Length: 122
Image 1 (cartoon, helix red, strand yellow):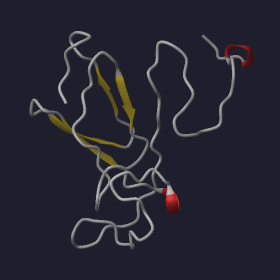
Image 2 (tube, one colour; image 1 turned 30 degrees about the vertical axis):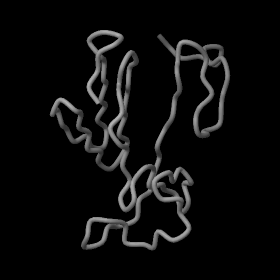
Image 3 (tube, helix red, strand yellow; image 1 turned 60 degrees about the vertical axis):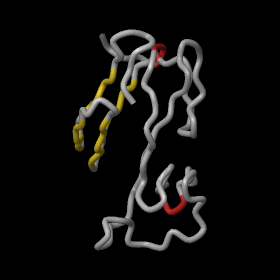
Image 4 (cartoon, rainbow, N blue to C red; image 1 turned 135 degrees about the horizontal axis):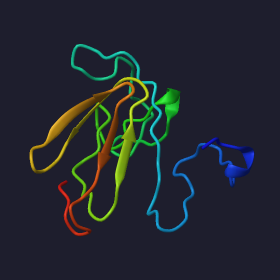
């Protein structure tokens, strides 16, 4: 099926978070250009001026999110919704509370689907 201009309902500029309609809870993207790391596996640039622990600033093209040195997301449930991650470049390490872990790289896609609406590791 060819994509035509009439197939596109509306264009939205990238923002944080993306506006959504039911049934989506929320939709976000992370497009970070992290600086080279240092010997401690942290960013090789000063973190001064960032709101550590809740840095969603995209200052200098990247965020530390919930981390205090490196960008991380704490344990959180994936219950009752689909999670799709597309890694355009770089690497993402993902682990859950049941011990499953994987590394995804440029071009990989990860789809998380809970067995039931109330199940889901975190």
